[in-house]
Length: 423
Image (tube, rainbow, N blue to C red; front, side):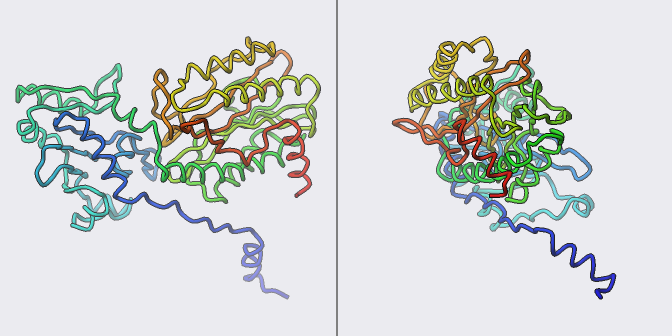
């Protein structure tokens, strides 16, 4: 007989313990190259960008502003990046907040300043404090200062205020480069695409769990917990957004957030949920039939949405605009008779954020990653349908990043059958 002390060990060993690898850090050379690209377009002006974001929760979890993260890879509050294109020896300086031994007993130790830290972070110099005072010296040497922070109606950022004050005090020109980061972040490098593909592969595991779990008699929340467990078991570092599980009439609510309804036979379940990996987001939606088969009315709507995706895919290429793709979506759903049931845009950019930086008016560059997510919403009939995939824009067309997800109606039905049969 096993002793009572051994029973918990046996029980734990019977539980699956996945061992996913942590996401790799991007090499410092990537951040140096990004900073160099920015400085090429600053007209010789010095510039500064400060981190944005507030710690949340008892563990003070911090989510860095995506622009600062893209330029530095730093995920801590209080940082400043100062750029000086005309600098002879030091062009990039990263300012980090002072160390606090008492605070670090609660939150963990931070790296001391050292040549190794400078090399690790991919900058010419690392200092403590804020970078605002350096702007007076660098602005005078450069003869102008540039604002990189994105435009907003409430312009209360401390980096913008410091740049304005320094330019006024020095009497130098103030240059506005407020769309520059958006434009440069729109096209992703191969290292970014690889992280997004891993986020998508992890997301596939979650949707496999959802295909298996969307059965009568369980709640939308049950489906959510199953798919999110699968995300983290496969190595997710977070969810890209709050998971949406809308069954029946809730599937016709675009951003249904309560996840409280019980699934019933005959329902469709719209599952809009995705994993994040190394801070890069995925964004995928699938619509599952609880009975395992779409009804005739549900199938008609599903096929219309699928065809709209196909028609959008046919237009995607470098040089096309988001408006071109929206027109393709609307034309397709107009022909199918569902245009008035299509209540949102066809898609958006994806990257460090699930709704990422990008120009919605200009031509798409090769390397952009966008979603294609038409939908038909029929609350009066008690269901909605949305299919959402991600594509990488190429010079001649696109590459479907979510190609491993079943998409055709018949394939989804087979996926559901096989998932529930444990195959």
